[in-house]
Amino acid sequence: MSVFAHLVAELGRLLEPVLAQSATAAAIVLFTVLVRLALHPLSRAAFRGATPAAGCLPILLQLPVFFVMYQAFSSAEVGGKANELLGHRLFAAPLGARWTEALGEGGLFGAQGLVFLGLFGAIAVVAAWSAVRGRRTAASVAAAAAAAAAGAPKKAAAAKKSGVKAGVGGGAKAGVGVMAEVSAEQQEVMRKLGGVLPLLSFGTLITAAVVPLAAGLYLLTTTAWSVAERAWLQYRKERAEQLMGGGVRSSL
Image (cartoon, rainbow, N blue to C red; front, side, top):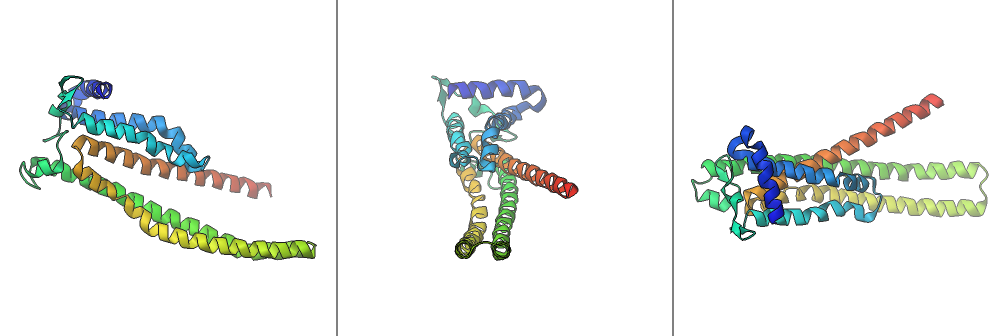
């Protein structure tokens, strides 16, 4: 933890000439961005579905970072010395303060309370963005599954006309039935998950309300990065598919 505290303090000193008392808060954001940049290859692998564990690793590897962040702004001492990070602020609110403490220092719309309200508002915007994208993704996956199920009988009929043997044709029919059944189940699962999973994004608000302000800044930054990163990867995937489709059409 002392290494982390030293790193954040040094980053804060570099930013202090520009950002004054909010330099350490900016250093936390910068530190979070550096962590997410280091984890970007794993996030790309998770998006491609390269390995089952790839999707969990970026989250699991961030847990120790979040824990250290929480401890660094909750402990009175670091390495046997007074924790100098606790004296730093984001505008009027100390980085080690919690929302309940801010409410006791001027109420909901006091100087510290307004800082927390700004943080909560930013997290809510990111969560809403994540929820909208989650619903769209679930809808597109369900539509793709429905299209695959609808196209399967036509493919089986075409194969049958091409001279497929009776035994093979019977197997194809059975396979089509199984495919349609699985697709229907997938559609139902995606429909349910599409209604529930996006709401989990707002759970970050509850966490930010009980952890130190510094940890809340970390949550805001990493959540915003996750949503923006996934949007960018999805855009690149769709762009690549469009280019490949255009190449196929031109060759035909």
